[in-house]
Length: 337
Image 1 (cartoon, rainbow, N blue to C red):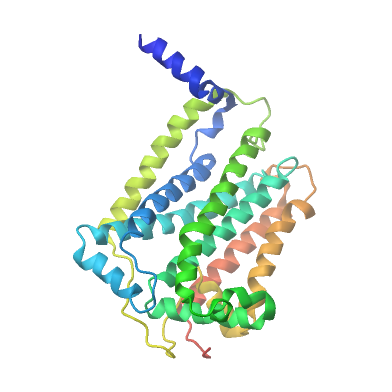
Image 2: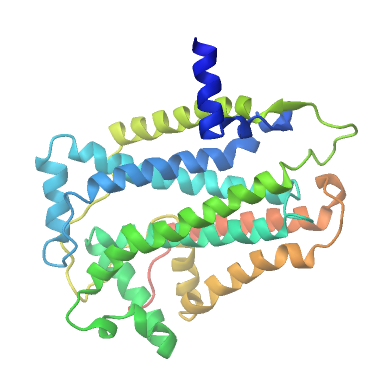
């Protein structure tokens, strides 16, 4: 009876389409980082929907509504902690996933388009992280927005839609909130769907140093592995939310500049201290560099030991970012917006 019901569901829902084969090495931590990132994103979506029931996207009340959530709503502090730590974990797994793809040369023919889609997803995720930082509307959020608005003003007409003047009478914070809960998630969900489609279409990349065809396993077995990995990610997020409260200051003092951005953005804080226009030029340069990788690297070799230049670039990229993050953490601001 049970097998008959299973067959009925498979026929009606198309579940049998998941029974295709993939390489056995898919069931490993480094090849499951994308799935773990997706698990963190799912936690972000669900917790964000719940948080939206309590948040008031108005400059006069945004910060107070969050303090009310944390101090007065039953387990509100925990809900906010889950949302915050899901974003932190997502940042780490997403970065490690991109490093793994580069290390194994999985961006090469025929997967160049999927690399570009992945970079687009990363850019939107970083934008979601930035808008989420602004929404808490404390001193850190106010100063982050001030830097963003300075950039928007410098790029002239292209930055006008991102400023207060574009929709007079509508608080910019409200527009940022709408982008954070609707526009950006819709875009990133569509891009994730396209990303997964191309993973299925081009199939999971083989091990770069494989000397013989990989042993295959059903994709459903990989899904079981991903469910366990996702459960582990969720447990980690819950434990972090239980033990470490995310930062939340009081309402901002306008005109004051005393905070530093979250660690994900502190690297540009360090560059800004060297030369303020780095705020404008650094992000496009980095994005352009990442986009150019599959275009410039046309070598068919994929094993890391036979790609010394590419591996040197990867190590250099990681070391530079790590150094900038450390420098930005310890340095003192030398100017004011």
